[in-house]
Image 1 (cartoon, rainbow over the protein chains, first blue to last red):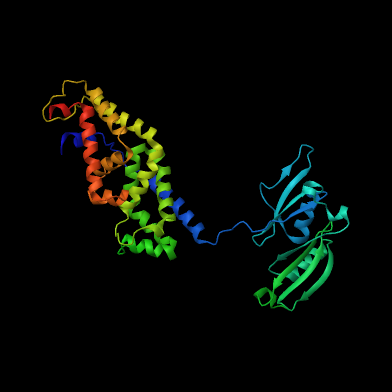
Image 2: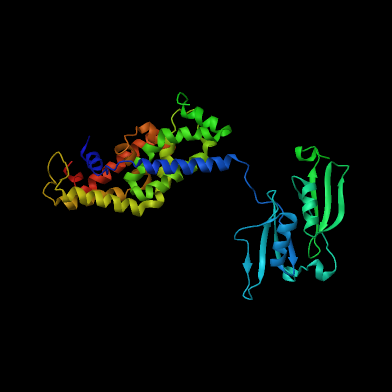
Length: 178
Length: 185
């Protein structure tokens, strides 16, 4: 080998490869590959935002009645100590946001005298869902019914007047009881 | 999976991503060694993750005509190393100091430069390597440190073999000039 290549060769550090570093890198790679292989929990194409007068009360009520779960890190508390923003998972991959009455020009149905939309949510067992909502004091606007297009649904009104429709596709294993 | 070529594994990993784990098992140790030599163990681990993340995401771009993925992985590593020039320079200088401090003189055939202070000589070589154009430094270090062939380097950097040859030629001339031995030749 000629001089200058010999110099470069001499400057080559002689570190050993750390097997633990390899194992850590492999684990991280396989985790990434697995999450790439699984259908990604993509951000839903539409994320509704609903206005509530009292978000904190709504969080508790919606969890009890409909089984929604508050999303971690979704809560924003204003300088007045009141919850100004929160987010809830619907349990089916989707979620919605909650804002204060008046924010974004949106009103709570409790203040403006009626809802202007209905949110349709697919659940695994709509009969159980309905029983739970009724027990928690939700107003059942439309009782459970098999629809001609193949869904079994009911409609409920939440504590501030937002209208929710809960659906289950018939023919799924959980729907065989009816 | 061991009997499959890298190209076959890469193709399989399009449908079955877990097959990519075999690519890691075959090449990660060599790649980590290369990265540690270049930037030190601390940064090398993160870079190794980057190399395989990029490789996984671009696996469909791997040329199925190539059986061996290692040159391709070296190429990804070379690219990522461009953002780590400072650590690389630190590392080269540390190597130079260690050699100079140990009293090693530049092995030169004619001994013309043996009179120079050993430390200063090695630092000049280290600086010369640092200041090579990226493409020349990558080719040089793959050739000398990793024992890559011209063909492998050409595959890594997606250039013709002739380009690798001229890059190495230029890099060597610059090193001789920096060490002050060019005039004697």
